[in-house]
Amino acid sequence: MLNINSINDGESLEENNKMKLETTKKQIRDNTRDNLYSVGYCELQYLLRDVNPFAYSSGIYGWACDYYELSIDGQRIIISTGYSPIGKNIDYKTAREYDTVASKLTEFGSGLNYEQAKEERSKLLNNFLRTLINNN
Image (cartoon, rainbow, N blue to C red; front, top):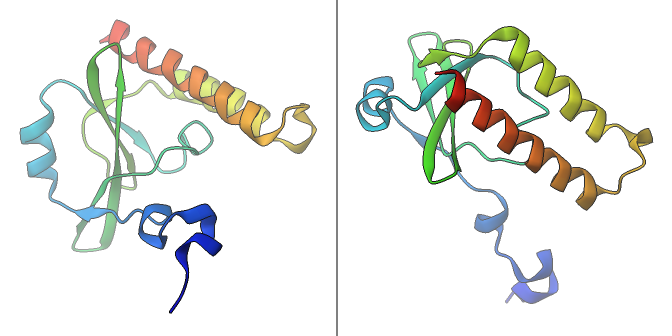
């Protein structure tokens, strides 16, 4: 029998590899109201690096988008990202600015260790979410 405490610091594989739920775009729209935002594929790849999507949708051509559930200041926000995302469009310039800063925090020569970079990306993501709320 495998001793789970000897690997993964005691975490089960299920905890490490969170599975995404398959859902429909209609279900997401019906359950998110005004806090659903969309951005194209890989436009926020560095900013969302430390967040796991909770669900995805697919269509006749296959995978369409992932959904990230986030919260800031007591508000729940869903960001849809992919080839066919749904929700209010996030301004490309704003998304690019935040993701560029997050990518610099991820670089090897940033001078930050992994935990420091993760914490800084988290702060940046919170600022990004506040920007979304204030602009819409």
